Length: 355
Image (cartoon, rainbow, N blue to C red; front, side, top):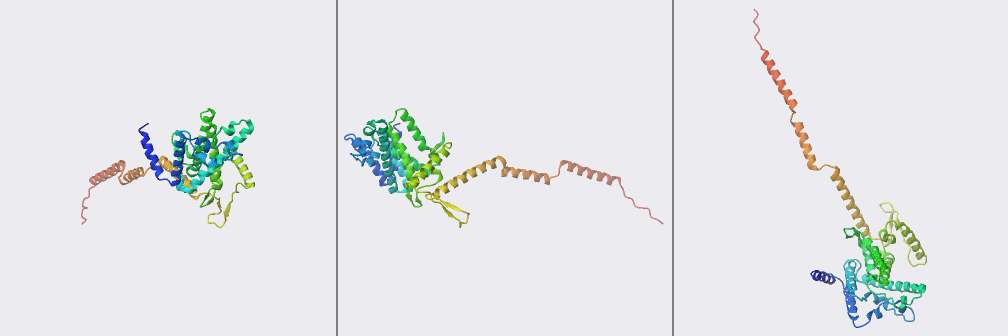
């Protein structure tokens, strides 16, 4: 184990060196706050406590700071790895500013939704622990957001080969794993809540609100909410999600999907959805062509003869045509022999002269 640590450290520093100042600042903040926690109670002052967020306390700064507060070494390592991965894979696509906006939006959303959920739990159970003992902090909310963003950008990438696991199913698989750990009391409820609200808030932001050169949001089919669930449940989840979307459109929280029909286009009717990525469509088209070519190649290998076999068959047939058969040779030899015998039996004499 010790021999792998220098290699991992070298790769981490190399990856960190190629990132922007935003990623470096977030990593430095996580490390500094963790070191300060040995002498100061940073978890109490900077983590989000549901009872302290509501009046009369109004600790609103904890909505921003709770995402960089860690209390264990393994949480620090997970936080640094998540930020670096986001810097390597998402920052080149979005830019440093958009990555910082995404980090801020996800953490604030996780704080607000987490505080409201624990407040409703307090109303239902009348236990003050849900207001003043629970502390929401750590990287789990941003981790859920990064996984959702990777599902959007590299959903078809294979994460594990055996068994085959693609990136598009990783967010829900990790959510199920955290739920199982929570049922066995191996993790606290705040980590599960942070991750779940991180997945939800990041999807809403990327689906409807993220600004880019093509407009706002991503309305492509592969990023619909139903795609987070197994194919058996997708029709039911899609119906429920469409109903919720209609309600949100009526209250003007979400915008209605706009379709543009270009009747004058050369290829019949063209439908454009706002936020649909042409690069994503091209990527899926290339994958489909690759799969089709592989299937045609397998069919050709199984049913079609190779060129070498065809050449051999052509050579054999031409040799058969060019060289006469043994029967033809024997028949011609017999004909020649009979002709020789006939020529030896028949003799020609001079006719006697008539006087």
